[in-house]
Length: 478
Ligand code: GLN
Image (cartoon, rainbow, N blue to C red; front, side, top):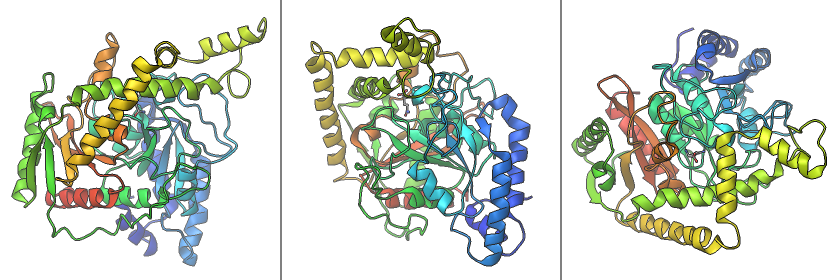
């Protein structure tokens, strides 16, 4: 089978009988067969099911009744519920847990005849920036398996990078779609908070969590996102704001104003090649008629502590449900109820998850609540308002996605703060609930991919995707 640049090409080939869904599924299964053992991107592959579904959908294509995603092969991060399939959140505590229902985002894709090919490796409970916190071993970057793919949705990024599936669903709380997209040289989008239902997503930080998409081209991303997005009665926080057709790209005649967040290019510790590549992207925009505006923020260094205080607080609450009683792992022969709780949680959770539960419990404790939690909430509001104000002057805010390209496996294990710092440019968007995308652009001298991060005002996914499509066209990637 030849590979298709975008789903629209694939769809044309399906309609004209040049290929079949079965062939498409077999192609991806072959890539998985060749690469997954080394890269550990998929924790489980639903090969037989996917083949069977493909054959059923092939019949629908013949009958003219196929949904709009017929033959779109999708991988899902191991934090998304899929009925009668395991979801473990990369954790031992959920080992053996089978989901009794399907996440709305996943269901909406299935309803349009997308094919779910397997569940993907990730950091335990989506906590991490390198996929090294998975209790099923790290996922590895397809460009060089000694490097991390980024995290926490590392497996999902690698799967798309290496053609093991066409698109992946990841989740992004502080950067977990955008950062691995950048490290793997693909596109990754985090929509606005509440744009996509969180029903069936195993919660980490509920006021931050978003389901996002990885793809190799903008069309596939737009099509997938527009299918998942929109109000869901099963998630009261999901937005009823209308979902435009993202994949029906708008005209690019009106050139937008792009604000460059200057501090991100001048900050100590940012790799000079990252700065250089970002500047080259800015020149590309200028050459193509975009107006560039320098913008500043006093809050860059406040965002990370705010993020880690609030998400750990939310995580400590969300993860209290894993108590050995209702789901997953329970120790054998506990002495009493307290012992059962304690040992089930101690043995079931990994080190990083326990660290965050403890930190979160601390910031929520009566004596420290105001000093940390309340204060962080206030600063969250300030950061959001600062960004909101910028959107009165500019359409988009641009910075590098990450301060450096992919780093070595084990390299940042010694100092956990080093790892937290890799999120410095991605946490602003979820703090404010804004949509943001990582666009693959350029490589460093060693050939490692770099990414450009573009953030838009809330619910401006359409504008963000139109812009990205235009970049794809002018940089000749499409
Ligand atoms: N790296 C960040 C964290 O560990 C982001 C994770 C995420 O977006 N799920 O919290």
